[in-house]
Image (cartoon, rainbow over all chains, first blue to last red; front, side, top):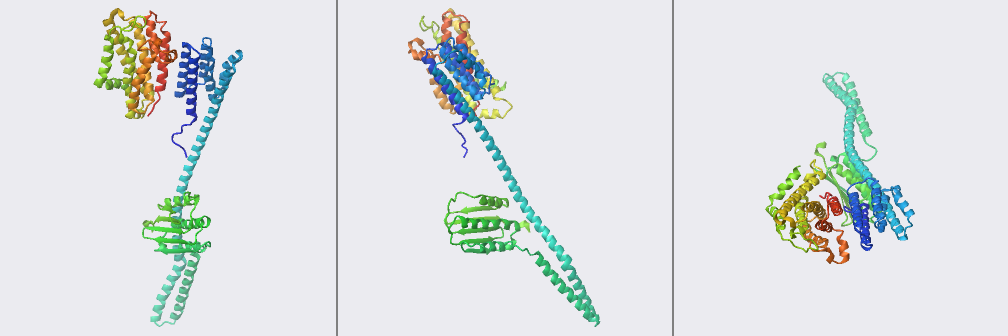
Length: 365
Length: 230
């Protein structure tokens, strides 16, 4: 989790180092009987530290810090230690060449070991903080990028879900059109011809015309033809794969781990295709969960179709582990349910119960 | 210059502010000569004038703290005005008020005490530079706090403390050596150092060091206090 106010950030650590460094130099000034020049140097370095905290100073400004120290050193030799501050700053901005004046001065004067230790400490801390700061920046960028692509993906997903519904509606309309056309072209013509033939037969029969018998046979033939076409058309239109309530029943019957008690109430023919495409994976997902996690002895599946909503409830009496964690499958289903204005909820208080509620669109038909 | 004008309007609208600003320094100008000839043979009011300046600056910079607490700063933040403009107009107004007070007090001092007020011109320069330091100090102090009451109640004590440690109230030499050295890190020490140089007959060149240090303190404090906290 990302905490709102992180205290140990590289920025805060840099400020902390500067404050501690200046305090230590202040103690050095107090102990080494430094005069007024020491106060001037301390104040100057404090102002520079404050300015660096407040603004982004140019890199070469570190040279000014060093110059100030070199100006004071002839009056107060302990000011050598003050060079630790520019050392830290130079390492922090990653410009090592800025410290050349200090290095030359150190070579000129054989420094005491403690001075070298102070410089190494200052430089090393500056370098570590710089690395930390850079890494932090990199991770932040990476996290931002990931977050952005996740949002884009989610937006894309909801768009796809909406277009899925639209696609299903379009497919259904096209199919209706096709059925109407086929009925009209193949069955309709034959029946019309049969009706005309029957009307002609009636006329001939009344007039006792010998052609009546032939006309009757023709009408009969046309009627039986149209009955055949109708049967063929229906047969051709019927999908091989079960859809709607049959598909749910097929899934329930095909579950072999434990008995599934499937109950459906209401008029299931009113449920549009795109809602079946959510109910089906819901049932599959719930049964897969039962198979994987719960040691259930039976599963109850209830499908209620009201005038306004559809409610699918799947309950098992098995044990529930890691109930807080919602899997990817469940999250996707929830999003799909939301896309059509419904909801998906899980109740683990007594066994495991998955309830999917979807609204029935009255304007659909 | 709206902010600049409004500092005056807001500050002088409050009667207690007017009394505080007028009465305290003017009364100080009438105080008799105190101290000892060895230390500061100046009228008492001028000896303590640094303390009075710090208190007035604290009262003036309250405006910025109030702006922050009352979310006025937030509203200014959405206007085309930058924080820098807001800050420098405020600081200019504060320093104008404090410099005006300095001028009045100096004139009163010359009228009341005559020759007993040593080099009023140099003293005026020192006090004017110290005005900036006090304004900066108040600004930096308020920027450290979120709660108005805490900032106010602590500030009075801190001002008295740095005045005492800096040698405004008594000679710094009577304090332990370590504290004497610590006092050099306080702006009030450099104010008294300047005053001591003046009373001992020093010229403007001699004053350069304390003045420069006070200016550095002001700069540091103003940078610290310039951060926009909303």
